Image (cartoon, rainbow, N blue to C red; front, side, top):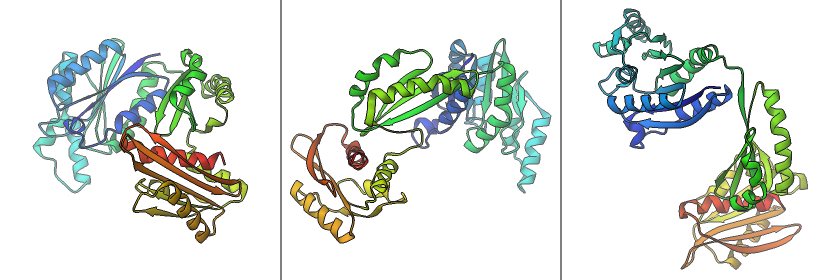
Length: 380
């Protein structure tokens, strides 16, 4: 199967002015086609650097997809950079200029001479007409390889990807496989604990198994390459079953499941309602629970950080005021050495009150505390 590299173009990406969502979208689409993506690169609006990135990518991959830099301004250099990388000149396409003019006419505007630049593309390129924007896209082929230039506007990029690029890739590279991923979500254990239990599975070739740590959660990704979705599922199923057996109750869901939804499902099965009190979390716990349908009644966001005993008293008082069966209190407060997270849980099964030190990045402490609190509800 071929491999691909993605190059997103734009100085605004390097300056952090906008978030690069195109690379993520493309990577997922290529994965579903069975195409391996080993690198993603971001380059500013510079002809020489873009051309160099394309040449280097072609040394490693059969498919290079660029997004961005196809607009009408001087700082839209992708067309020139692709031509330079492929060792060809740019040529004017009258039919593209006509398409651009018609596009502007439909919008009740007149194309400027700047837009005429967009009708110049590398000599010999296959034109991809853009009916949802003004930037024509194109494919430049070389031997067994292809460079595909797509617009940077996400709506245009996604439309052209599905309408033209995916069919082209299927035909050109004889694609007859898919890559499917299954994501298992865990809570209650750290990345090193999980790695110790399933490390040998992380050495498999197909499916592959990998870990991704988040604040208070760890995801286990199982990825299989196969001729069909059914075959991929058949490869994934025994590995998933083995992982679930090894990790036990740490696994709380898969794919789109969220910890807050699973936690509230557990309370709903018990027939219990919930009220929460938080401090130092920036409202994150209440925001996580508020959109969920079910047993969550209300939440209180405290302006100050209470002591451990205060948190328990306030949580129980708020629970009784809201007439909830379960009260959860979570607070983050600084100590001389680190941050401390306080927990208070009152339920028909009893009272829990404890604290845990947090030594990770301070900005991640609220989310870590939220997930720890939700996991208490999940395992209640």
